[in-house]
Image (tube, rainbow, N blue to C red):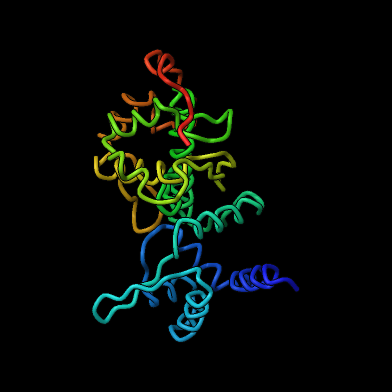
Amino acid sequence: MSSRGSELAGLAALLADRTRADMCLALVDGRAWTAGELARHAGVAASTATEHLNRLLDGGLLVERRQGRHRYVQLAGPQVAELLESMVTHLDPPRPAVTNLRTATVAAALARGRTCYDHLAGRLGVAITDAMTTRFLLDQDSGFALTEAGLSWLTGPLGVRPADLHATRRPLARACLDWTERRTHLGGTAGAHLCRRLHELDWITRAGTGRAIRVTPKGESGLHTLLGIEPSAPELTPTPDPATAAADTRPVR
């Protein structure tokens, strides 16, 4: 077996256990969790959770952070989240077993809007991506890239610092296939900073303790003004903005 083949088999083995897979998917919310929280989430004993977490840490899928006496773990980076999300899209469309009102509410909230590690997903994420494409801020015809107008939009009205967009080797814009919508949403550095700024502007907020995202009244007004979408019905396709139609639509790599 080749070296690469052996490494791939080892990676697959890490995710071949349901408990470890459940833990990794929980961590796609981008936050750091304690071993106890992950044990309760996966429905296993604390000692069992620790054993699984050590394997994931040794395999490079997770990293550990310590704060005082507390031990936290999180995904090793956005590339791990992207790997997990892309694997999930190969499964049949999710049909969660709705046994009560709370389960139904959580499922609906996740489909409406959520975080995918550090960027927006669900119908909200897809709607923002569509709106950016319609307004020539994002080019999906020749790859997947911000246009010059899109870069100006991010660093202008949204207030993202230009230096932050090029501070890492991570792609500026990346197409991330949404596992509930089966359509593309914006990932990469641009997607991460867009999500961060919407939080800072109080346009979005977490709905509960999970990955679900809710648009605030302030955000409804802001998103409508900037992108012409209605967050209450994000499946609607926005119309082009004449102001951006004439702007520089060359992709930024």
